[in-house]
Image (cartoon, rainbow, N blue to C red; front, side):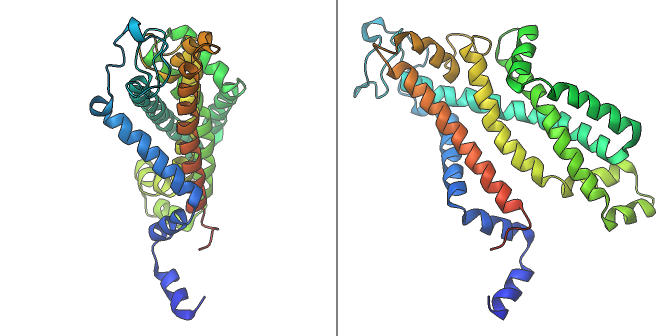
Length: 290
């Protein structure tokens, strides 16, 4: 690296360096464009879907992919392409809302635990340990079983089972930031706890939360699909990918496209957010070099 390049590198903002590292990661860029594609499809579902996703037509039931139905039709003659497009809305909504619930409660608990420490820290972390003792999917299944099947309860369940992970990550980040000199200076100047937390602690410990949030969207989508597959999530005739996968398994021999296409949609969306999360992790890592 020449002297001029070294000077330019040193004067660049952390944000520009992060963006530069992200752009150089080919897998991250592929994940980003895939995620953007799914989001655009979900937002424009009303205008780009060729058919009503719940409209039945028994004359074309279990039709193989054709010009009029590019992804074929299901057991009720509903257009699978239209159901996949509208299903993207549902999967993204479940993933994003579920993760937002986790972030709000997990970051709040983790920040309080790491900042104040002591008995409060011990109490919060032991409660989180109890939740983490259960497998995530089984915990979500138990919560939905208590609350009842449905979209709202599904999002709540997904939000709750991820809270311990966000709390743990947030607590670790807060403890690392607490040792910085500017935090000690803020305390010495008589700064209020809320001011220090929102002005210094959270902004400087948010990077791992961003990465985890992106990856947790993929986990939430996969969990929601699994619960819907078991009949505990979105209920018919909602065009949810997991539910479509479940109903299509009865026709694997005669019409494999009914299950294969929703399965591929789940796979590609989960893959997109996982690659995006990996790229963000590498880009936000200060040890990574251009």
